[in-house]
Length: 231
Image (tube, rainbow, N blue to C red; front, side, top):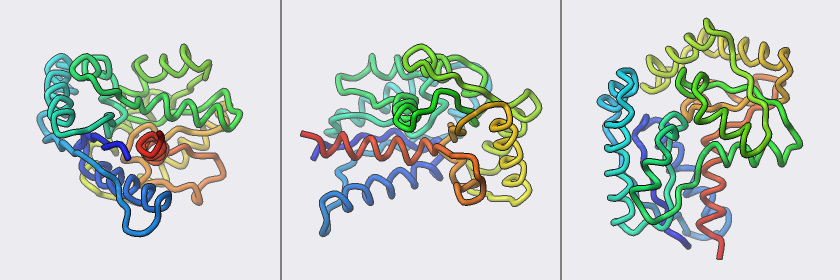
């Protein structure tokens, strides 16, 4: 079994899900008392969130590069960044270490193609929905068309992530709002909706909508388990 390296804490709510999913996946595959071999570096999210909204991505990348080197030094054989948004800095992180990074957008795109889909909706932070580091990668590498909500809905999605979900706050009115936006994306031609923030799965579940949902936390963790157990 390969040792999985995690950079988490963004937020710790979703990192907790990663830890559970990775251990459950290894136990299902190997049985008995098996669990995943993991090295975790959990960052303090408050200064990272400040850097995000100040647009100081260079400094944020330096902090994550330091975390990545620590995880590698701890014995990790590959790396997961437990957040969609900070994959904006994937290149800076990859340059800091010798071990590979399993990119969350690649994992999501592979699942989309496996399901025979070409057009999806995307929910996430404003950074993920509006910038090209995520949408562009899916389009250029996989030929997937990505549609996002309108500006007002993007603002609402972003606010709910940072003000509620990152603190583990689940509100019914927020769930209703997300489900409305998911339906709107489906009406706009999306064959499925990517939950492109690792906290969104805390709020909306597949059984609450007829639109196929692709939870990147689950997909990313499953890919990591497969890689950890591959020979």
